[in-house]
Length: 57
Image (cartoon, rainbow, N blue to C red; front, top):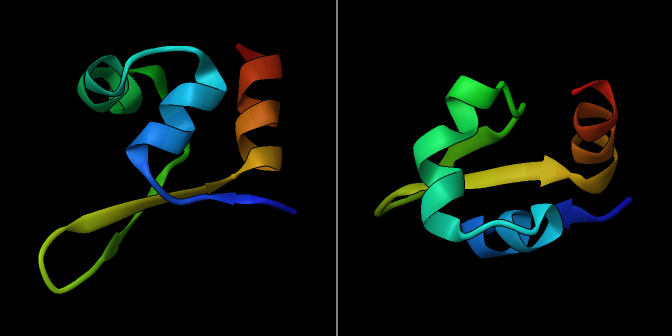
């Protein structure tokens, strides 16, 4: 199970730009978890969860 842990990886998997993903992921209902780090919140989702989301939408 591969984990996508950057906005760039997730956007690339979806075939969209990072800015589009960051603006719309909540509205689209993508189940990305934001993990706190020392400077920012890091996105994280498995390929399986992302694939399941894509198939249901």
